[in-house]
Length: 404
Image: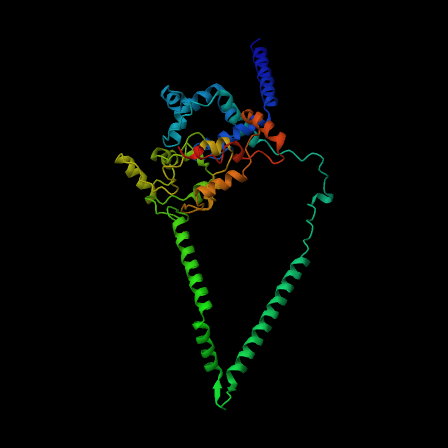
């Protein structure tokens, strides 16, 4: 009887798992991927390989969903309750406490689990793909380099023509320099003397003087205007930071999402400068002996903030909201900051001037897909316009949008 009861439970569990698996759609996996990369990927792999914390492959076989939800919401409380698995995990990874995420719903956590399972699943063969004879890969088509050869030959011809022209000019000047002109009185005048006399006549000409003065005035005026427009611009500014933090290593090689350190980038006016506690999520275990990491430890011991030097700084008269651009607008960080993932030292790549912002508002389409707020605006706009709805069409050029 007991065996039959257990068998029944196993069958029901298998049916429930199969139903849960088939009910997971692409949207759940996509949502889980975004949450995982923004919050979990810095410490966990979707494989069974450990990073800062354990690999998460097969986590649902080790722990129930209810346990995982409790752990994500408040890992410290689960450890404090004496849970054997949680305590062993805590001790195994050098007592590094996981960050709590109480704001994520059970559905969102399940979507992360669905993404982890999807990563562990073997890739399916492409539908309708024809097998290659003999099991070998089909050879790639050869590229035709004929056009490039024609371009190179054309450039070579242009260089030859330029060289011939230069040789002709040099030859003509040499002949003139070696020849002497004869005046009416029979005196010989050298080419250089004649050239100097011509220069004096041109310099004494009133029209020439006026033109030269006008040209100098225009050049000075342009230099003055360029200097005036450059006031307050810090394009290329790359200050030395108190700690040599490499975005190329963290954001590039390790692919840590910007939101993990700059927590306000998708939901606040400012992106926020990360606190030392965020550094300790990883460096409580990794590279503790590094001289740069020791600076973080000293800041924590002294209870002093790390005095990072701000790189991108708008004037107080301008209002800018990160969430409006990254979350609602769907812009990537590199749209304004450049390829941060390739920067060893962060520098200001864009000018961040008013003209630069306005130009972007004139060119950028409104990210209205899947946002019902814009449905009516798009409908009204499309009645009289063939161009897509742009930021400038929803008030993106109004002064009060950016200036209080």
